[in-house]
View 1 (cartoon, helix red, strand yellow):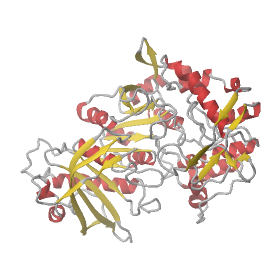
View 2 (view 1 turned 60 degrees about the vertical axis):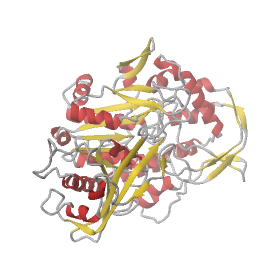
View 3 (view 1 turned 90 degrees about the vertical axis):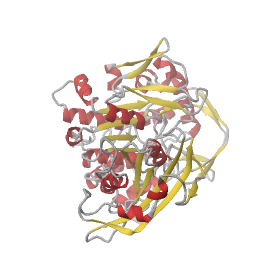
View 4 (view 1 turned 135 degrees about the vertical axis):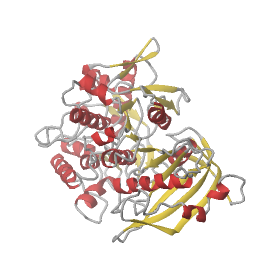
Length: 572
Protein backbone atom coordinates (compact mmCIF):
# COMPACT_ATOMS: atom_id res chain seq x y z
CA UNK A 1 0.00 0.00 0.00
CA UNK A 2 1.28 3.46 -0.90
CA UNK A 3 1.26 6.08 1.82
CA UNK A 4 1.89 9.60 0.54
CA UNK A 5 2.54 12.24 3.16
CA UNK A 6 1.04 15.61 2.29
CA UNK A 7 3.55 17.52 0.14
CA UNK A 8 4.18 21.23 0.76
CA UNK A 9 3.55 23.26 -2.39
CA UNK A 10 5.93 26.24 -2.38
CA UNK A 11 6.31 29.36 -4.50
CA UNK A 12 9.11 30.82 -6.62
CA UNK A 13 10.59 32.60 -3.63
CA UNK A 14 12.05 29.34 -2.32
CA UNK A 15 15.84 29.41 -2.11
CA UNK A 16 16.38 26.41 -4.39
CA UNK A 17 17.33 25.91 -8.01
CA UNK A 18 13.63 25.35 -8.67
CA UNK A 19 12.85 29.01 -8.00
CA UNK A 20 14.24 29.89 -11.41
CA UNK A 21 13.45 26.80 -13.39
CA UNK A 22 10.00 25.80 -12.15
CA UNK A 23 8.10 28.59 -13.88
CA UNK A 24 5.86 28.62 -16.94
CA UNK A 25 8.20 31.02 -18.74
CA UNK A 26 11.25 28.83 -18.17
CA UNK A 27 9.35 25.72 -19.22
CA UNK A 28 8.06 27.45 -22.34
CA UNK A 29 11.55 28.55 -23.36
CA UNK A 30 12.80 24.97 -23.11
CA UNK A 31 9.99 23.05 -24.79
CA UNK A 32 11.04 20.85 -27.71
CA UNK A 33 10.58 22.45 -31.12
CA UNK A 34 10.29 21.13 -34.67
CA UNK A 35 14.09 21.37 -34.88
CA UNK A 36 14.48 18.85 -32.06
CA UNK A 37 14.38 15.09 -32.40
CA UNK A 38 10.77 14.45 -31.49
CA UNK A 39 8.24 12.45 -33.56
CA UNK A 40 7.05 14.17 -36.71
CA UNK A 41 3.63 15.77 -36.81
CA UNK A 42 3.53 16.77 -33.14
CA UNK A 43 2.56 20.26 -32.02
CA UNK A 44 3.03 21.24 -28.38
CA UNK A 45 0.47 23.61 -26.90
CA UNK A 46 2.59 26.06 -24.88
CA UNK A 47 -0.57 27.64 -23.42
CA UNK A 48 -1.26 24.39 -21.56
CA UNK A 49 1.89 24.49 -19.42
CA UNK A 50 1.61 23.99 -15.67
CA UNK A 51 4.57 24.20 -13.28
CA UNK A 52 4.38 23.49 -9.55
CA UNK A 53 7.19 23.24 -7.05
CA UNK A 54 7.13 20.61 -4.30
CA UNK A 55 9.38 20.27 -1.28
CA UNK A 56 9.58 17.35 1.17
CA UNK A 57 7.30 15.16 -0.91
CA UNK A 58 7.37 11.77 0.82
CA UNK A 59 6.30 8.31 -0.24
CA UNK A 60 6.42 5.51 2.31
CA UNK A 61 5.58 1.79 2.26
CA UNK A 62 5.58 1.61 -1.55
CA UNK A 63 5.74 -1.94 -2.87
CA UNK A 64 8.29 -1.16 -5.59
CA UNK A 65 10.50 1.41 -3.84
CA UNK A 66 12.23 2.21 -0.59
CA UNK A 67 10.90 5.27 1.26
CA UNK A 68 11.76 8.55 -0.44
CA UNK A 69 11.65 12.25 0.38
CA UNK A 70 12.23 14.58 -2.55
CA UNK A 71 12.02 18.11 -3.93
CA UNK A 72 10.96 18.49 -7.55
CA UNK A 73 9.18 20.56 -10.18
CA UNK A 74 5.98 19.05 -11.54
CA UNK A 75 5.56 20.03 -15.19
CA UNK A 76 2.74 19.19 -17.56
CA UNK A 77 1.72 20.27 -21.04
CA UNK A 78 -0.40 18.99 -23.91
CA UNK A 79 0.36 18.18 -27.51
CA UNK A 80 -1.58 17.11 -30.58
CA UNK A 81 -0.95 15.42 -33.92
CA UNK A 82 -1.31 17.11 -37.27
CA UNK A 83 -4.67 16.42 -38.91
CA UNK A 84 -5.98 14.64 -35.83
CA UNK A 85 -8.54 15.91 -33.38
CA UNK A 86 -6.63 14.76 -30.30
CA UNK A 87 -4.99 16.11 -27.18
CA UNK A 88 -2.43 14.16 -25.16
CA UNK A 89 -1.16 15.41 -21.80
CA UNK A 90 2.32 14.50 -20.54
CA UNK A 91 3.68 15.11 -17.07
CA UNK A 92 7.31 15.24 -15.93
CA UNK A 93 8.77 15.48 -12.46
CA UNK A 94 12.07 17.37 -12.61
CA UNK A 95 14.65 16.82 -9.84
CA UNK A 96 16.80 19.61 -8.45
CA UNK A 97 19.65 20.51 -10.80
CA UNK A 98 22.19 19.44 -8.20
CA UNK A 99 20.50 16.04 -7.88
CA UNK A 100 20.00 15.38 -11.60
CA UNK A 101 22.04 12.37 -12.75
CA UNK A 102 21.49 12.54 -16.54
CA UNK A 103 18.62 10.03 -16.32
CA UNK A 104 15.08 9.83 -17.66
CA UNK A 105 12.52 7.28 -16.43
CA UNK A 106 9.29 6.57 -18.29
CA UNK A 107 6.46 4.96 -16.31
CA UNK A 108 3.35 3.02 -17.28
CA UNK A 109 -0.03 2.04 -15.95
CA UNK A 110 -2.10 -0.83 -14.55
CA UNK A 111 -5.32 -2.64 -15.46
CA UNK A 112 -7.00 -0.43 -18.09
CA UNK A 113 -5.00 2.69 -17.22
CA UNK A 114 -2.01 3.83 -19.25
CA UNK A 115 -0.42 6.01 -16.58
CA UNK A 116 0.72 6.06 -13.00
CA UNK A 117 -0.26 2.52 -12.09
CA UNK A 118 1.25 2.76 -8.60
CA UNK A 119 0.23 6.27 -7.62
CA UNK A 120 3.09 8.71 -7.08
CA UNK A 121 5.54 5.99 -6.11
CA UNK A 122 7.14 5.36 -9.51
CA UNK A 123 7.38 9.07 -10.23
CA UNK A 124 8.98 9.91 -6.89
CA UNK A 125 11.17 6.81 -7.01
CA UNK A 126 12.65 7.93 -10.29
CA UNK A 127 13.32 11.45 -9.01
CA UNK A 128 15.06 9.99 -5.95
CA UNK A 129 17.58 8.43 -8.36
CA UNK A 130 18.18 11.74 -10.11
CA UNK A 131 15.92 10.95 -13.06
CA UNK A 132 13.40 13.15 -14.77
CA UNK A 133 10.34 10.92 -14.55
CA UNK A 134 7.41 10.99 -16.94
CA UNK A 135 3.91 9.70 -17.59
CA UNK A 136 1.24 10.22 -20.23
CA UNK A 137 -2.54 10.08 -20.26
CA UNK A 138 -2.45 8.68 -23.81
CA UNK A 139 -5.21 11.10 -24.80
CA UNK A 140 -7.71 9.91 -22.21
CA UNK A 141 -7.44 9.15 -18.48
CA UNK A 142 -8.58 5.61 -19.13
CA UNK A 143 -8.17 3.02 -21.83
CA UNK A 144 -9.93 3.86 -25.07
CA UNK A 145 -7.64 6.52 -26.53
CA UNK A 146 -6.46 6.10 -30.09
CA UNK A 147 -2.96 6.87 -28.84
CA UNK A 148 -2.92 4.13 -26.20
CA UNK A 149 0.11 2.01 -25.38
CA UNK A 150 3.30 1.97 -27.42
CA UNK A 151 2.70 5.18 -29.39
CA UNK A 152 1.81 7.41 -26.44
CA UNK A 153 4.55 6.13 -24.14
CA UNK A 154 7.14 6.29 -26.92
CA UNK A 155 6.14 9.88 -27.69
CA UNK A 156 6.21 10.84 -24.01
CA UNK A 157 9.71 9.41 -23.78
CA UNK A 158 10.99 11.04 -26.99
CA UNK A 159 9.58 14.44 -26.00
CA UNK A 160 10.79 14.00 -22.42
CA UNK A 161 14.38 13.24 -23.42
CA UNK A 162 14.64 16.43 -25.49
CA UNK A 163 12.87 18.48 -22.81
CA UNK A 164 15.26 17.07 -20.19
CA UNK A 165 18.30 18.13 -22.22
CA UNK A 166 16.87 21.60 -22.77
CA UNK A 167 15.77 22.04 -19.16
CA UNK A 168 19.17 21.12 -17.72
CA UNK A 169 21.19 22.77 -20.51
CA UNK A 170 22.82 19.55 -21.68
CA UNK A 171 22.77 20.67 -25.30
CA UNK A 172 24.25 24.06 -24.44
CA UNK A 173 27.95 24.85 -24.82
CA UNK A 174 27.70 26.37 -21.37
CA UNK A 175 26.82 23.04 -19.81
CA UNK A 176 29.27 22.04 -17.09
CA UNK A 177 28.36 18.36 -17.29
CA UNK A 178 30.86 15.94 -18.73
CA UNK A 179 28.30 14.41 -21.06
CA UNK A 180 25.02 15.34 -22.70
CA UNK A 181 23.97 11.68 -22.65
CA UNK A 182 20.62 11.05 -21.00
CA UNK A 183 20.32 7.43 -19.86
CA UNK A 184 16.75 6.47 -20.61
CA UNK A 185 14.75 3.84 -18.74
CA UNK A 186 11.24 2.46 -18.44
CA UNK A 187 9.58 0.79 -15.44
CA UNK A 188 6.13 -0.73 -15.00
CA UNK A 189 4.20 -3.78 -13.79
CA UNK A 190 1.10 -5.66 -15.02
CA UNK A 191 -0.36 -3.48 -17.80
CA UNK A 192 2.67 -1.31 -17.16
CA UNK A 193 4.83 -4.38 -17.70
CA UNK A 194 3.15 -5.03 -21.04
CA UNK A 195 3.65 -1.42 -22.01
CA UNK A 196 7.32 -1.89 -21.19
CA UNK A 197 7.47 -4.88 -23.51
CA UNK A 198 5.78 -2.80 -26.20
CA UNK A 199 8.64 -0.32 -25.92
CA UNK A 200 11.23 -3.09 -26.23
CA UNK A 201 9.49 -4.33 -29.37
CA UNK A 202 8.39 -1.09 -31.04
CA UNK A 203 10.61 1.74 -29.75
CA UNK A 204 13.93 -0.08 -29.29
CA UNK A 205 16.10 2.94 -30.04
CA UNK A 206 14.64 5.09 -27.25
CA UNK A 207 15.78 3.14 -24.19
CA UNK A 208 18.94 2.00 -22.48
CA UNK A 209 17.09 -0.20 -20.00
CA UNK A 210 13.54 -1.49 -19.50
CA UNK A 211 12.09 -3.06 -16.35
CA UNK A 212 8.92 -5.07 -17.03
CA UNK A 213 7.07 -6.75 -14.18
CA UNK A 214 4.43 -9.49 -14.69
CA UNK A 215 3.62 -8.14 -18.15
CA UNK A 216 0.02 -8.57 -19.27
CA UNK A 217 1.15 -9.70 -22.72
CA UNK A 218 -0.83 -12.02 -24.96
CA UNK A 219 -3.98 -9.95 -24.41
CA UNK A 220 -6.02 -12.23 -26.66
CA UNK A 221 -5.49 -15.12 -24.27
CA UNK A 222 -4.78 -13.26 -21.04
CA UNK A 223 -7.96 -11.22 -20.76
CA UNK A 224 -10.20 -14.18 -21.54
CA UNK A 225 -8.22 -16.34 -19.12
CA UNK A 226 -9.44 -14.20 -16.24
CA UNK A 227 -12.82 -15.88 -16.57
CA UNK A 228 -11.51 -19.35 -17.41
CA UNK A 229 -11.58 -20.87 -13.87
CA UNK A 230 -15.33 -20.44 -13.33
CA UNK A 231 -16.08 -21.72 -16.84
CA UNK A 232 -13.85 -24.75 -16.26
CA UNK A 233 -15.77 -25.41 -13.05
CA UNK A 234 -19.09 -24.98 -14.87
CA UNK A 235 -17.93 -27.42 -17.58
CA UNK A 236 -17.29 -30.11 -14.97
CA UNK A 237 -20.59 -29.30 -13.28
CA UNK A 238 -19.32 -29.49 -9.71
CA UNK A 239 -18.97 -26.41 -7.51
CA UNK A 240 -16.66 -26.87 -4.50
CA UNK A 241 -17.15 -24.42 -1.63
CA UNK A 242 -14.48 -21.73 -1.36
CA UNK A 243 -13.10 -23.38 1.77
CA UNK A 244 -12.05 -26.40 -0.31
CA UNK A 245 -9.82 -24.21 -2.46
CA UNK A 246 -8.40 -22.42 0.57
CA UNK A 247 -7.68 -25.70 2.32
CA UNK A 248 -5.88 -27.15 -0.70
CA UNK A 249 -3.78 -24.01 -1.13
CA UNK A 250 -2.75 -24.05 2.53
CA UNK A 251 -1.88 -27.74 2.30
CA UNK A 252 0.15 -27.10 -0.86
CA UNK A 253 2.13 -24.34 0.83
CA UNK A 254 2.84 -26.59 3.82
CA UNK A 255 3.83 -29.54 1.65
CA UNK A 256 6.06 -27.56 -0.73
CA UNK A 257 7.61 -25.04 1.67
CA UNK A 258 10.81 -27.03 2.30
CA UNK A 259 11.47 -28.12 -1.29
CA UNK A 260 13.99 -25.28 -1.61
CA UNK A 261 15.87 -26.48 1.46
CA UNK A 262 14.47 -23.79 3.74
CA UNK A 263 11.35 -23.70 5.95
CA UNK A 264 9.95 -20.17 5.87
CA UNK A 265 6.35 -20.49 4.68
CA UNK A 266 7.34 -19.53 1.12
CA UNK A 267 7.08 -21.88 -1.85
CA UNK A 268 10.19 -20.96 -3.81
CA UNK A 269 10.12 -24.07 -5.99
CA UNK A 270 6.71 -24.22 -7.61
CA UNK A 271 8.35 -26.36 -10.29
CA UNK A 272 9.16 -29.09 -7.76
CA UNK A 273 5.82 -28.55 -6.05
CA UNK A 274 4.01 -29.44 -9.27
CA UNK A 275 6.14 -32.57 -9.67
CA UNK A 276 6.09 -33.80 -6.08
CA UNK A 277 2.82 -32.78 -4.44
CA UNK A 278 -0.20 -34.75 -5.58
CA UNK A 279 -3.41 -32.94 -4.68
CA UNK A 280 -5.23 -36.30 -4.81
CA UNK A 281 -3.72 -36.92 -1.38
CA UNK A 282 -6.25 -34.36 -0.10
CA UNK A 283 -9.24 -36.61 -0.85
CA UNK A 284 -10.96 -37.43 2.44
CA UNK A 285 -9.31 -34.57 4.32
CA UNK A 286 -11.62 -32.34 6.33
CA UNK A 287 -12.06 -28.62 5.80
CA UNK A 288 -13.46 -25.92 8.05
CA UNK A 289 -13.76 -22.16 7.52
CA UNK A 290 -15.52 -19.48 9.55
CA UNK A 291 -18.13 -17.21 8.02
CA UNK A 292 -16.68 -14.14 6.31
CA UNK A 293 -17.49 -11.02 4.34
CA UNK A 294 -15.45 -9.70 1.44
CA UNK A 295 -15.55 -6.50 -0.56
CA UNK A 296 -14.27 -6.26 -4.10
CA UNK A 297 -10.93 -4.69 -4.91
CA UNK A 298 -11.80 -4.42 -8.58
CA UNK A 299 -9.07 -4.38 -11.21
CA UNK A 300 -5.56 -3.45 -10.25
CA UNK A 301 -2.54 -4.86 -8.52
CA UNK A 302 -2.93 -7.91 -6.35
CA UNK A 303 -5.51 -10.67 -6.59
CA UNK A 304 -8.39 -9.94 -8.95
CA UNK A 305 -11.79 -10.01 -7.28
CA UNK A 306 -15.36 -9.57 -8.42
CA UNK A 307 -16.72 -6.06 -8.45
CA UNK A 308 -19.15 -6.52 -5.59
CA UNK A 309 -19.42 -7.53 -1.94
CA UNK A 310 -20.18 -11.05 -0.78
CA UNK A 311 -20.75 -12.99 2.39
CA UNK A 312 -19.93 -16.64 2.83
CA UNK A 313 -21.29 -18.87 5.59
CA UNK A 314 -19.28 -21.12 7.86
CA UNK A 315 -18.14 -24.18 5.94
CA UNK A 316 -17.34 -27.69 7.13
CA UNK A 317 -16.95 -30.91 5.24
CA UNK A 318 -14.69 -33.48 3.64
CA UNK A 319 -12.81 -32.98 0.36
CA UNK A 320 -14.23 -35.30 -2.29
CA UNK A 321 -12.82 -36.88 -5.44
CA UNK A 322 -15.01 -34.52 -7.47
CA UNK A 323 -13.52 -31.53 -5.65
CA UNK A 324 -10.05 -32.72 -6.60
CA UNK A 325 -11.11 -33.28 -10.22
CA UNK A 326 -11.97 -29.58 -10.39
CA UNK A 327 -8.72 -28.53 -8.76
CA UNK A 328 -6.58 -30.73 -11.02
CA UNK A 329 -8.29 -29.26 -14.06
CA UNK A 330 -7.48 -25.73 -12.84
CA UNK A 331 -3.86 -26.69 -12.08
CA UNK A 332 -3.30 -27.80 -15.67
CA UNK A 333 -4.96 -24.89 -17.49
CA UNK A 334 -7.94 -24.35 -19.76
CA UNK A 335 -8.60 -27.20 -22.24
CA UNK A 336 -10.95 -27.33 -25.21
CA UNK A 337 -13.49 -30.09 -25.81
CA UNK A 338 -10.76 -32.22 -27.42
CA UNK A 339 -8.69 -32.02 -24.25
CA UNK A 340 -6.05 -29.77 -25.88
CA UNK A 341 -4.60 -27.06 -23.63
CA UNK A 342 -5.75 -23.57 -24.60
CA UNK A 343 -3.90 -21.48 -22.05
CA UNK A 344 -1.54 -21.56 -19.11
CA UNK A 345 -2.45 -22.35 -15.48
CA UNK A 346 -1.37 -20.54 -12.35
CA UNK A 347 1.46 -22.02 -10.32
CA UNK A 348 0.84 -24.45 -7.42
CA UNK A 349 0.48 -22.62 -4.09
CA UNK A 350 -0.58 -19.44 -5.90
CA UNK A 351 -4.32 -19.87 -6.12
CA UNK A 352 -6.88 -20.39 -8.85
CA UNK A 353 -8.23 -16.93 -9.66
CA UNK A 354 -12.00 -16.51 -9.28
CA UNK A 355 -13.64 -19.82 -8.49
CA UNK A 356 -17.02 -20.28 -6.76
CA UNK A 357 -19.30 -17.96 -4.86
CA UNK A 358 -22.09 -18.56 -2.37
CA UNK A 359 -25.69 -17.73 -3.32
CA UNK A 360 -27.65 -17.02 -0.14
CA UNK A 361 -30.98 -17.11 -2.01
CA UNK A 362 -30.53 -20.72 -3.04
CA UNK A 363 -28.13 -21.73 -0.23
CA UNK A 364 -25.78 -23.16 -2.84
CA UNK A 365 -22.41 -22.64 -4.49
CA UNK A 366 -21.96 -21.62 -8.11
CA UNK A 367 -20.25 -19.09 -10.37
CA UNK A 368 -21.33 -15.57 -11.22
CA UNK A 369 -20.95 -13.28 -14.19
CA UNK A 370 -17.84 -11.12 -14.04
CA UNK A 371 -17.98 -7.37 -14.41
CA UNK A 372 -14.66 -5.77 -15.32
CA UNK A 373 -13.18 -9.11 -16.36
CA UNK A 374 -16.03 -9.61 -18.82
CA UNK A 375 -15.59 -6.22 -20.47
CA UNK A 376 -12.86 -7.55 -22.74
CA UNK A 377 -15.35 -9.85 -24.44
CA UNK A 378 -18.39 -7.58 -24.45
CA UNK A 379 -16.66 -4.32 -25.35
CA UNK A 380 -13.35 -5.04 -27.04
CA UNK A 381 -14.30 -8.16 -28.98
CA UNK A 382 -18.02 -7.71 -29.58
CA UNK A 383 -18.29 -3.90 -29.41
CA UNK A 384 -21.24 -3.98 -27.03
CA UNK A 385 -21.68 -1.13 -24.57
CA UNK A 386 -22.21 -3.47 -21.63
CA UNK A 387 -19.84 -4.65 -18.92
CA UNK A 388 -21.41 -7.80 -17.49
CA UNK A 389 -21.04 -11.09 -19.34
CA UNK A 390 -23.69 -13.77 -18.88
CA UNK A 391 -21.76 -16.99 -18.39
CA UNK A 392 -24.53 -19.56 -18.11
CA UNK A 393 -24.09 -20.99 -21.61
CA UNK A 394 -20.37 -20.21 -22.05
CA UNK A 395 -18.17 -23.23 -22.71
CA UNK A 396 -14.45 -23.91 -22.80
CA UNK A 397 -14.64 -23.87 -26.60
CA UNK A 398 -16.22 -20.40 -26.47
CA UNK A 399 -13.24 -19.22 -24.45
CA UNK A 400 -10.87 -20.73 -27.00
CA UNK A 401 -12.71 -18.98 -29.85
CA UNK A 402 -12.57 -15.65 -28.01
CA UNK A 403 -8.86 -16.09 -27.36
CA UNK A 404 -8.19 -16.68 -31.05
CA UNK A 405 -10.45 -13.77 -32.03
CA UNK A 406 -8.66 -11.40 -29.64
CA UNK A 407 -5.22 -12.59 -30.70
CA UNK A 408 -6.02 -11.96 -34.37
CA UNK A 409 -7.79 -8.65 -33.79
CA UNK A 410 -5.07 -7.15 -31.61
CA UNK A 411 -1.99 -8.96 -32.92
CA UNK A 412 -0.27 -5.70 -33.91
CA UNK A 413 -0.96 -3.93 -30.64
CA UNK A 414 -2.13 -5.48 -27.40
CA UNK A 415 -0.82 -8.99 -28.03
CA UNK A 416 2.72 -7.56 -27.52
CA UNK A 417 4.62 -10.79 -28.16
CA UNK A 418 6.98 -10.01 -31.05
CA UNK A 419 9.91 -12.29 -30.24
CA UNK A 420 12.62 -10.82 -32.49
CA UNK A 421 14.25 -8.20 -30.29
CA UNK A 422 17.30 -7.71 -32.49
CA UNK A 423 16.83 -3.91 -32.85
CA UNK A 424 16.73 -3.53 -29.05
CA UNK A 425 19.84 -5.69 -28.69
CA UNK A 426 21.66 -3.82 -31.47
CA UNK A 427 20.87 -0.54 -29.71
CA UNK A 428 22.59 -1.86 -26.57
CA UNK A 429 19.37 -2.15 -24.58
CA UNK A 430 19.01 -4.14 -21.35
CA UNK A 431 15.78 -5.87 -20.30
CA UNK A 432 15.00 -6.84 -16.69
CA UNK A 433 11.83 -8.96 -16.62
CA UNK A 434 10.34 -10.29 -13.35
CA UNK A 435 7.22 -12.16 -12.30
CA UNK A 436 5.81 -13.37 -8.97
CA UNK A 437 5.44 -17.15 -8.67
CA UNK A 438 2.18 -16.77 -6.71
CA UNK A 439 0.51 -14.54 -9.30
CA UNK A 440 -3.21 -15.34 -9.69
CA UNK A 441 -3.91 -12.68 -12.29
CA UNK A 442 -1.26 -13.36 -14.96
CA UNK A 443 0.21 -16.87 -15.08
CA UNK A 444 3.91 -16.86 -14.19
CA UNK A 445 4.67 -19.28 -16.99
CA UNK A 446 3.38 -16.71 -19.49
CA UNK A 447 6.58 -14.77 -18.87
CA UNK A 448 8.66 -17.93 -19.22
CA UNK A 449 6.92 -18.71 -22.51
CA UNK A 450 7.81 -15.32 -23.97
CA UNK A 451 11.40 -15.57 -22.73
CA UNK A 452 11.61 -18.97 -24.44
CA UNK A 453 10.14 -17.52 -27.65
CA UNK A 454 12.84 -14.84 -27.75
CA UNK A 455 15.56 -17.44 -27.12
CA UNK A 456 14.35 -19.72 -29.90
CA UNK A 457 13.92 -16.92 -32.44
CA UNK A 458 17.17 -15.10 -31.70
CA UNK A 459 19.45 -18.06 -30.99
CA UNK A 460 17.89 -20.91 -33.00
CA UNK A 461 21.13 -22.80 -33.50
CA UNK A 462 22.22 -22.80 -29.87
CA UNK A 463 21.30 -25.29 -27.15
CA UNK A 464 18.93 -24.34 -24.35
CA UNK A 465 21.91 -23.73 -22.05
CA UNK A 466 23.99 -21.76 -24.56
CA UNK A 467 21.00 -19.80 -25.83
CA UNK A 468 20.08 -18.70 -22.32
CA UNK A 469 23.69 -17.75 -21.66
CA UNK A 470 23.63 -15.41 -24.67
CA UNK A 471 20.20 -14.09 -23.75
CA UNK A 472 21.29 -13.36 -20.18
CA UNK A 473 23.86 -10.91 -21.49
CA UNK A 474 21.04 -8.42 -22.17
CA UNK A 475 17.69 -9.98 -21.22
CA UNK A 476 17.20 -11.50 -17.76
CA UNK A 477 14.07 -13.05 -16.28
CA UNK A 478 13.57 -13.40 -12.51
CA UNK A 479 10.79 -15.44 -10.87
CA UNK A 480 10.01 -13.94 -7.45
CA UNK A 481 9.25 -16.73 -4.93
CA UNK A 482 5.91 -16.32 -3.18
CA UNK A 483 5.12 -12.92 -4.71
CA UNK A 484 1.58 -12.16 -5.86
CA UNK A 485 0.56 -10.06 -8.85
CA UNK A 486 2.77 -6.96 -8.65
CA UNK A 487 2.30 -7.15 -4.90
CA UNK A 488 3.28 -8.86 -1.70
CA UNK A 489 1.33 -11.97 -0.75
CA UNK A 490 -0.67 -12.24 2.46
CA UNK A 491 -0.73 -16.06 2.12
CA UNK A 492 3.09 -16.20 2.00
CA UNK A 493 4.04 -13.13 4.09
CA UNK A 494 7.74 -13.99 4.36
CA UNK A 495 8.16 -13.73 0.60
CA UNK A 496 10.17 -10.78 -0.64
CA UNK A 497 9.28 -8.34 -3.41
CA UNK A 498 11.75 -6.35 -5.56
CA UNK A 499 12.34 -2.77 -4.47
CA UNK A 500 15.78 -2.26 -6.01
CA UNK A 501 15.13 -3.01 -9.66
CA UNK A 502 15.85 0.52 -10.86
CA UNK A 503 19.12 0.52 -8.94
CA UNK A 504 20.03 -2.86 -10.48
CA UNK A 505 19.22 -1.52 -13.95
CA UNK A 506 21.26 1.65 -13.47
CA UNK A 507 24.30 -0.37 -12.45
CA UNK A 508 23.79 -2.77 -15.37
CA UNK A 509 23.51 0.02 -17.96
CA UNK A 510 25.86 2.66 -16.59
CA UNK A 511 28.47 0.55 -14.78
CA UNK A 512 28.22 -2.75 -16.69
CA UNK A 513 27.45 -4.66 -13.47
CA UNK A 514 25.27 -7.62 -14.46
CA UNK A 515 22.46 -8.42 -11.97
CA UNK A 516 23.23 -12.12 -11.49
CA UNK A 517 20.66 -11.97 -8.72
CA UNK A 518 18.25 -9.20 -7.77
CA UNK A 519 17.01 -8.14 -4.34
CA UNK A 520 13.57 -8.91 -2.92
CA UNK A 521 12.65 -7.16 0.33
CA UNK A 522 10.27 -8.83 2.79
CA UNK A 523 7.60 -6.25 3.57
CA UNK A 524 5.50 -8.17 6.11
CA UNK A 525 5.53 -11.27 8.29
CA UNK A 526 8.12 -12.42 10.80
CA UNK A 527 11.02 -11.68 8.42
CA UNK A 528 10.01 -8.12 7.58
CA UNK A 529 13.01 -6.10 6.42
CA UNK A 530 15.01 -9.12 5.26
CA UNK A 531 16.52 -8.75 1.79
CA UNK A 532 16.51 -11.96 -0.22
CA UNK A 533 18.37 -12.87 -3.42
CA UNK A 534 16.41 -13.95 -6.49
CA UNK A 535 18.03 -16.17 -9.13
CA UNK A 536 18.08 -15.54 -12.87
CA UNK A 537 15.95 -17.96 -14.89
CA UNK A 538 16.44 -20.79 -15.80
CA UNK A 539 18.34 -21.34 -12.54
CA UNK A 540 16.18 -22.07 -9.52
CA UNK A 541 16.81 -21.38 -5.81
CA UNK A 542 18.05 -24.00 -3.37
CA UNK A 543 19.41 -23.40 0.12
CA UNK A 544 22.34 -25.51 1.24
CA UNK A 545 23.54 -24.97 4.80
CA UNK A 546 21.51 -21.78 4.83
CA UNK A 547 23.17 -20.33 1.72
CA UNK A 548 21.43 -19.75 -1.60
CA UNK A 549 22.53 -21.81 -4.57
CA UNK A 550 21.09 -20.96 -8.00
CA UNK A 551 20.89 -24.36 -9.64
CA UNK A 552 19.65 -25.59 -12.99
CA UNK A 553 17.65 -28.78 -13.31
CA UNK A 554 16.20 -30.05 -16.58
CA UNK A 555 13.09 -31.62 -15.05
CA UNK A 556 12.35 -28.43 -13.11
CA UNK A 557 12.58 -26.34 -16.26
CA UNK A 558 10.30 -28.70 -18.19
CA UNK A 559 7.69 -28.45 -15.43
CA UNK A 560 7.28 -24.76 -16.28
CA UNK A 561 7.19 -25.06 -20.08
CA UNK A 562 3.57 -25.79 -21.01
CA UNK A 563 2.60 -26.63 -24.59
CA UNK A 564 -0.53 -25.11 -26.17
CA UNK A 565 -1.64 -27.72 -28.73
CA UNK A 566 -5.06 -26.11 -29.21
CA UNK A 567 -3.56 -23.60 -31.68
CA UNK A 568 -2.48 -24.20 -35.28
CA UNK A 569 -0.27 -21.09 -35.29
CA UNK A 570 2.55 -20.09 -32.94
CA UNK A 571 1.56 -18.42 -29.68
CA UNK A 572 4.68 -16.57 -28.58
